[in-house]
Amino acid sequence: ELLPTTLALEVTAPLIDDEAYWKRCALSRWDNCQITDHGSSWKRLFFERNLADFLEDFDPVKTDTEVLMQTLAISKDYCFSLRLKQFLSHLDMEMIFQNLPTLCNLDMTYGVKQIGMEYER
Image 1 (cartoon, rainbow, N blue to C red):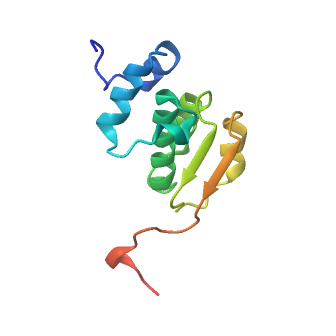
Image 2: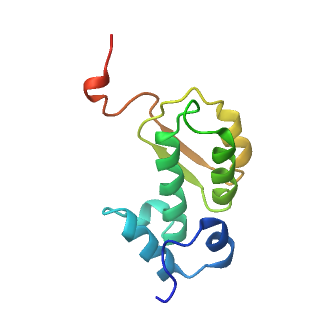
């Protein structure tokens, strides 16, 4: 428990396999962590949820695709399943599939989950 959970993922992903560290990282970000949905691995849970959060909020107009490529590169060895509750962008899915060679399962809802007051017909 000496390492802070705020270290850069570029550093921690390839170097830290300790499940206790990834459990602390996950629990510091999310309240509801179902490890059984992620192969009973805290590291896998962290990277799958982190990538899902990133993709759910990704807007190619506001975020450079280079940031997307970096996030995919960091996550590629640890993401086997993705569950996207919303997918806003018109991103070419080939980019995701080519950069996530371990991805076996994709559950995706294309659209906006909570539109709020910004809805225009």
